[in-house]
Amino acid sequence: MLEPFPTRADRTACASIPTPAVELRDLSVFAGGRAILSDVDLAVAPGEILCLLGPSGVGKSTLLKCINRLIDLEPGLDVRGEVLIEGEPVYRPEVDPDLLRSRVGMLFQQPVIFPASILDNVVFGLRHGASRTPRRELPGRAERALREVGLWREVRDRLDEPATTLSVGQQQRLCLARTLALEPHIILMDEPTSALDPRSARTIEELALALKGPRTLILVTHDPEQARRVADRAACVTPGPGGAGAVTACEACDDLLRDGRLEELLEGVIA
Image (cartoon, rainbow, N blue to C red; front, side, top):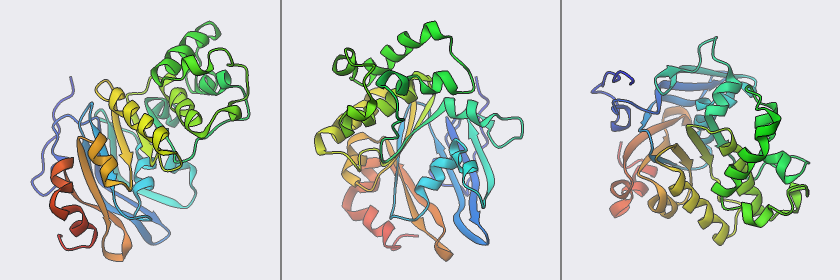
């Protein structure tokens, strides 16, 4: 059992969850002398879906990449502050980023498909990640992941076919299956439905709702109605002084979206 984190009265409500799955403390990101994110404090409760809402270019995707240290792969960026996963600081030198990314998976805007078979795409992380899975376990792990995203019946007789033969919606579910095969505790979703047709987008939303509970999800979206459909809480990320992104509100999703409150936050009416 994790010890409760100390609460700090000057933090937002999102930073006072006693035992967060994810916690950001004074997180800032700089590119040269320019701040991309500034003093972000955020906490995500285990098993919930938190949506990040805000205008384009305000640093929402950068925030996600800080959580699983994909930001390390972008040269010239300086990350300051703390990121804790289940109470553990992830920027300590002894932390293996590959192991971290197996615990904290990510789904991107566009499906990231490798030039390989459907099966090879699902088990890619199991074969090449930080913890290699024995070959005999791969088919079972792949089937479980494909069943969880509702793809098994659609692809079970064509596992050796190229993944590029799938529709875009199927490809996005395949990417989610690849993430789930690693059994992550946390899943980050960066506008995962923006490239999809409405039916495929709704399927991803339904999967997000099915996945929460055993897993914690953080989802970036530009669609307030999508946030209303799937999120327990929503955080508003807006540009502060100099254009750096900052979390200006974090509330139950219905509270943030009622009576034009989100629009006021985005327009800077409410500090």
